Length: 273
Image 1 (spheres, one colour):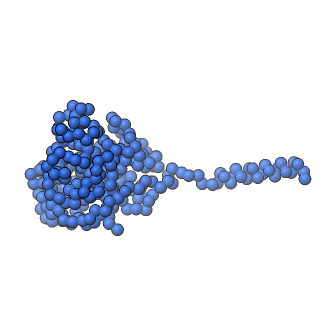
Image 2 (cartoon, helix red, strand yellow):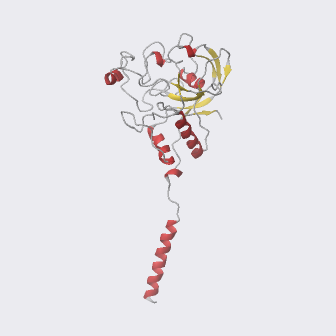
Image 3 (cartoon, helix red, strand yellow):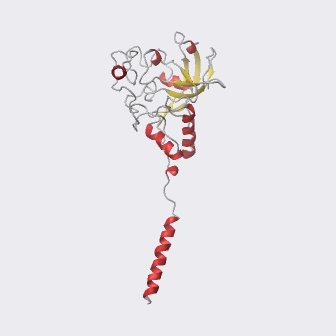
């Protein structure tokens, strides 16, 4: 056989192989299936929302009926949010003073950022995640609608990262839970503390979180699955944080900011299927 023919044939096969490989789809970061949250099923019920002797916008106390739903066991983490940023070619939020730590909750996100994340995640997973409503959030803080000022009772907190002695040592802030030591001056890895009675972690500590609702006044009428005001200027934030004093750690405490305000984090919810 002609040696030149063999060489030319081998060269053709080699080139064909390269061309074939060039058409094989390579793994893409955008094509990766993102991490999905661990969801906890919450059994619905009727509870008293608000606190008559709290802030003015926590009044009046009123009955709320909540249907079964799901809420994420943990807040969205730094690593989960980074995955979204890489896939959508956007920058991470402003880095906090303690830096980005993968298993800590994401912080410094706007309400719009949270919605963009959810839209991306739903498209990638085929799920229908959303932000929890304010009524759902307080229901979970209250361990399924229990009464009381704090979800842990009248004693010091037992399972939340709040403004403690560690926080005061770092910041010199005086508005803290005195003689309470949770071990973290700032955010803690999600799930560092025992879950509440419903199996949800960090629901009233670590970071404050976005709800889906437009902020509005309460009605004294009983409502079922309320979703807040129909429109408005501010969105609701719920749950205390690593820097929250006792007054603002109450189960009924509300916060409201414009949707482009970049400070809170968030967790996901989902309707019962």
